[in-house]
Length: 84
Image 1: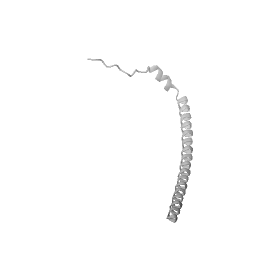
Image 2 (image 1 turned 90 degrees about the horizontal axis):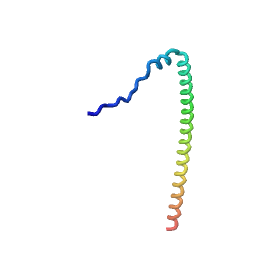
Image 3 (image 1 turned 180 degrees about the vertical axis):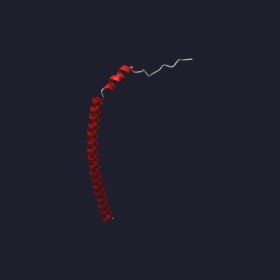
Image 4 (image 1 turned 60 degrees about the horizontal axis):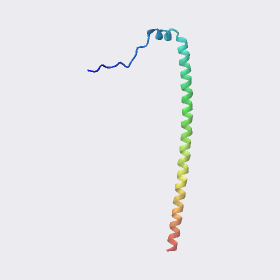
């Protein structure tokens, strides 16, 4: 039988107590994290709005191209019918 190797290593208790000893820096870093996340959210919202505007412009362009192609096909069809 093969013995299993434990993957998890326990953290020393001394490291945890130092981190938890002063809550003020943790709160400050939490505030900084919140501010960073809010900035990222705002940036992503702006990118999303730009993407939506770009999609709308592309759809409008596609529609105009499709209309133009339809017009050319109808014009060519009419020219062929007149020559018959």
